[in-house]
Length: 163
Ligand SMILES: [Fe+2]
Ligand SMILES: [Fe+2]
Figure (cartoon, rainbow, N blue to C red):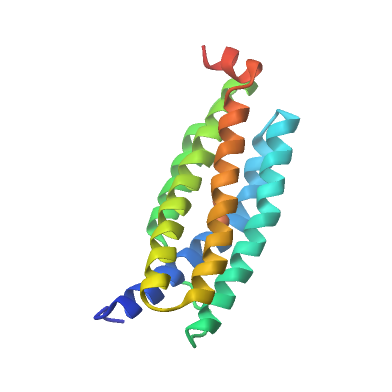
């Protein structure tokens, strides 16, 4: 579709993010499996459950703008996950691998945070207060997930691994 208005751009971005969140529901279990630290594993598994909720919220957002939930391939998330696989998959040392997983996870979170921040702003601008509210709930969870990863990266074990 040709994007002519901010409404179109909002819709296209929701489609893109819908693809990304669904892709993450498939990818996070693999990431959790690769992690060694039990804290890191459980943090990823916790965020997987939240991510399933992100998919449902986006389906609600489609409904709020009278559209059907349709995913549009998100090249950005594909690239980030491919790079994560390539780098992390080759690390044999478990501590260093965990550090790599945290870094990849945070890169994904930062992408999501950027997207949700933009969408919350546009939703307000377009008068979709209800959509802005639920997108904001997801944004808060992405921010918390990022902070959790930062705190895990600050753990003594992780710090030693990074040195
Ligand atoms: Fe998400
Ligand atoms: Fe996330």
